[in-house]
Image (cartoon, rainbow, N blue to C red; front, side, top):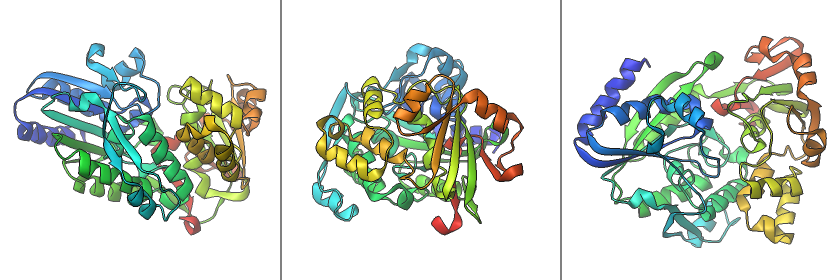
Length: 404
């Protein structure tokens, strides 16, 4: 889609919205730079007929955007208009998803009720709330966005922990790239029951970024689920790469501006794991990674327990209250392990060999990996020597056909 085509859709939405007093835009953080949400939010900020437009950063557990990131992604929107979400504070409890429903959608693997908490600003008298984000394959919920942007991006610790562990227990391979999953069912239930009275619209994008240049393939605007379902159908066409044979050597590049932690960088693992052969190797080129978790408490848990396999994490949860009390970290440890199926080597500049191997990965200095693979010369897909290169794991899902 061209910029003018996107603007025509946004102008139609602006006309339908009419004059408003207070508007809240829910926007993604810098990890979704290629969503084109920045362009959309900037246009709405300047063109909605409203007395006040504010933006809440749907961070989930991520760190707030820096001024530089805000400027790069959202242009000339004043910095004071952005409100970072805090997943531990400023929340309102709406209710819960019953344990009976959770047990039903998880096949009995999880039976506890899930509290539904969101940032209280969503219910602070805005007469229009617009959730802007990208639909793309996702490890927890199957396909990102829609109600997930509310209940995780602007959600509380309990919902984030429970939904992530629900996805991990039920198996990310069974969910990734699919609309319907146990976590999605939980979000749909909560949206239908607790968001019905909110003046909420969704503006969803499907994008690709060949050579790093954003290409918007579709924009879907709706109040209900129909826009999300149409976006899912398109994303499955353009964001999923199915391979005839499993890959022996996978190399993934993590842009240092976008990926500064393993919490984010492990997309290199779970977005490619279904493409990697048993006994294969994954090299994660992560020059900007200087920590494991985005949050100091989660970082400490990752360093303590490491990415050492699903069964071990489940056992450690049962035996250790600190990990049991932060199930999103436990889920992350499951997602970041290959369960011994293939070798994962993190190639870092800022994290030391001791830190990387202590967390359960193999280590290679970034300079050595850069010399060996010359990522600046690689093209997306297969290269000489059987190397398969992924320039940005956040933009899709890669799988061997027999596994998908």
